[in-house]
Image 1: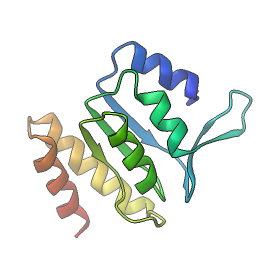
Image 2: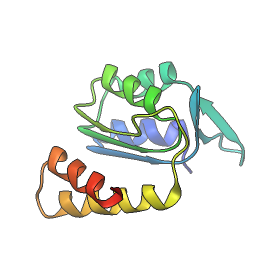
Image 3: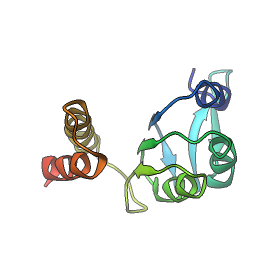
Length: 123
């Protein structure tokens, strides 16, 4: 389940890449609460969860993810990919960007070049 406990466990185990694909709202990302419901996670909580063992890369695929991205940077994540607008994200654009980004990473491109590939895929 995509709970905050699962996130903590992955980070404690040395997770190097955090990929969040889910629902974002203007004030939070949503995780599962362990009972089938949603748990709002505001940026301050996300930062506190990630700060002890930040991954090298965080990819946030969600509407309204700008605040979450800033929290991840404050938590020490070296590379953060997220929506730069505080706005909804179209599913087709998210899929195209994500596919191009990870294909570039898979062939050895750095994060900047992979990001540029993602941007080109939705231009």
